[in-house]
Every structure is written in C-alpha cells, then in structure tokens.
Image 1 (cartoon, rainbow, N blue to C red):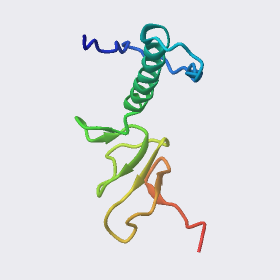
Image 2 (cartoon, rainbow, N blue to C red):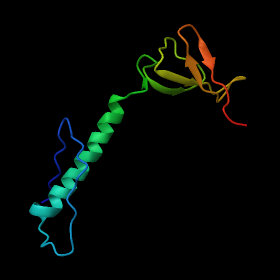
Image 3 (cartoon, rainbow, N blue to C red):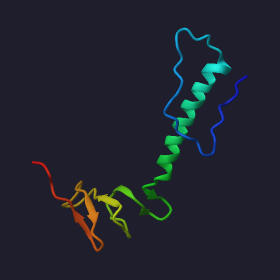
Length: 110
C-alpha cells in the first residue's frame, strides 16, 4: 500500500506541472500521482544540480568554483572562485584570485 515515488538517476526539471482544478474528477493514478511525481522529480533535479556544483571538495579541502568562506584561502585557485576570509584585517571581505595572489575587493558603498 505504501508505494514510494521513483526518482530517476538523472531527474529532469519540467517547469509546466498540471494544475489540479476544482472540476477535476480526482483520481490518484490519473491526476494526483503524476503531479506529485513531477514535483518530486523537479526537487530532485534541483538537488542534483546543486550537488553537481560542489563548492568545496571535502576530501581535498580545495575549492573548485563558487564561494569559499573560511579562515584559510584555497591552496590552489582559479578565476572562478571567490574567497571570504573569516578572520584577520580583511575578514568578511570578498577576495578574488588575480592569477598570482588573493586580492580584496573594494567597497562599492558607504
């Protein structure tokens, strides 16, 4: 009786999900389950995209791309990474890699 929804290995995000209307003769297999299944698959798709865009590789301790907020800078960097130190004189200031060193960004407000 308690059958689980199947989540495909490579879920696809589909923006158009059928709306259940007041005049629908609601039947689980024809309307409710397909809608729920697509919502679950959309959620799984977004989760997979997020997981595929890993910011920090926990095994290596090296940032791959995105935002890295921690005390130490990434040991190797590229121009797809922003580092925000958590301590020191430039704490909480975004830094970018210029190919040689980490450079703090300038304030654009205040």
